[in-house]
Image (cartoon, rainbow, N blue to C red):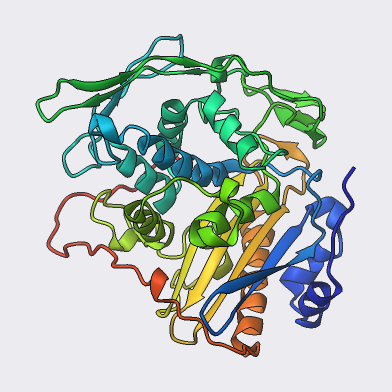
Length: 413
């Protein structure tokens, strides 16, 4: 078993802040399963960054459900796979449709939220990152395939990580299958067909993971006994931090950890990891519901506003009482940058799948105040060299204020 890692420097920083929303949870780590990684970034005179991770209660064997954070590596892998199809004239904007070959699989031949009404890998990634929609993640999973997803994680050194489930209520065996996929020419004919995929590799489910006192099963029946996460997705917090770092700062990680992406891919990811729903014309989200800080947990408070000069490049997840955020933060006005990753479990009744979690009363306040403690610390922290953050200054989209289309207010995420 791995040893829990806690840096005294980070512990003291958090406790000395004296924030009750943070301290209450830090004082019962067994109950709240808090894990934090704060990554200090320092630049040299050539603007080359170095990274120092500070840990609080970090333990790769302390399971948390990664929920929608899995959408981030799937976006990276989908772009990487597309780059192997360039010779076939296929890129992230090429229309793509999904057929079905197994019971339970659903076809997809149109996307009303796209400007041209057609699905594409680019549009799936936008929807998965902007407000964390679920079906786009399923489609990315089906395109890459369970086998390649997990081989890629292994090749890149993420030995304790696995992504083995779509968000469709499938069995472990059903999740091994992926739909047939077709990329289309402009006239609707098939440019390239990918047959249905099946993962023949074995998956290590030897670590038994059970949580809670009771749970509701797939038939909505209350079962007295813990919920079984043994065959669920698993991504330790440090793996998520490294996955994000490998895309924000590819030269900072070993070559084997980098994704094979183009300059345009990186620009695309930087935009949609940090763009707000209110800036996005397609899909047109209702920004009174999907407000600017909706998926920016470290800056999400009752104002729903983000600081004008700050952008957060991140992915969040929420499910089964777990809240997780993996972020790179850039403050362009104050020339401040850092990474912050954290997960917390807030489920006081210890019943899973009942939809009753303490997100609003405990989880979101904890992550917001944690984020502000680190942000305020970074604003004051001395740096020998101020960072040049121009690589992350993105040209964002702008929604047309005369666009009278109805906004999306009910989305599966």
